[in-house]
Amino acid sequence: MAKKTSRTREARQRRQKQRRRNQRLTVLIALVVIAVVGGAVLFVSNQPVEAHIPEDLSARYEGLPRSYSREGYPRLGDPDAPVTVEEYSSFACPGCEAFHSASFDAVLDRVKAEQILFTYVPVQTGSVPNAPGASRAALCAGQQAMFWEFHDLLFDWQTRYGNTAFSQNRLLAGVEQLGLNSAAFTSCFNSADISATLNAALNEEVSSTPTIRVNGVTVDGGGAIPTADIILTAIDDATPDGWGQPPAAEAAPAAEEPPPTEAAVAADEATEIPVEEAQEPPQPPADDAPEDEPAVAVESAEEPES
Image 1 (cartoon, rainbow, N blue to C red):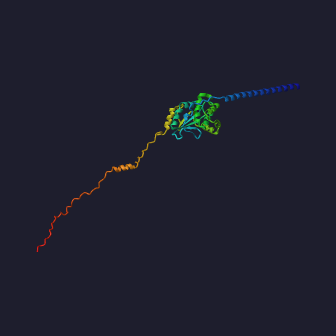
Image 2 (image 1 turned 180 degrees about the horizontal axis):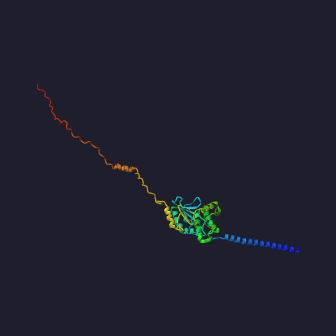
Image 3 (image 1 turned 45 degrees about the vertical axis):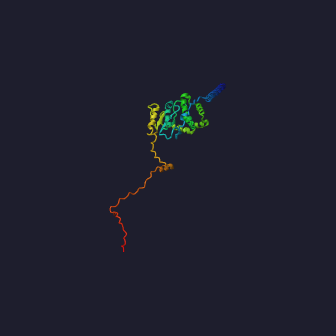
């Protein structure tokens, strides 16, 4: 009986040792797999990627005022423009790219005419991966005065590279090719200010992207993306009467005559016509004046002869 118990104990110990060997082997295999996958990821992440930069990227926005809303949304145009236009959009949204390609130039012309102040609100929608990363990259490029250039770049990449458009490597390659400060960009990327801006956009009351609002009123596209003509009509309807017309010209004051020169005075004096002094006309004789008496000859009296 004791012999049988001993064999049972030995068998149990062998099974335990085998299980431990199997566990160690499993852990070793898992570590090898992790190392291989990690190495492959590291290898891929360090590979250079294409980051196409369109020509004349900055020329489109040359001379246009750039600013930000209190939420941190990028703005383009005269802050005192009579009309405001907001675009609620995502770089990962195909419909937003369609609006950008078909209608943005026409809206930009109204920015250049100082008729509108245009605001881009970065909403996180769309089917292309890493929409938040794309928005963060554009906003951080904006801290180095290049939001609108990166804005155009990302919409170009959406159609050019598809699902890999906003990979981390491509975003960093774009930063480098645009000549931005990489250290400042990296510091900005996960900053609290950028997170606050994206959270504010997340809380905006929009049901779809792109949404276009003119003076706070959503432009109705009839169930589709609003066309350029519809948007421009809404802008014109919201523009105050008389905007863009020159102010009425005021009547110019009459010019004062300059004082006469010495030569002019001398010339006037030379041409003066002498005026004769008025002479008193001869008075007619009065009716009661005495007539002249005839002269009386006075003879000298002769003395009588004596």
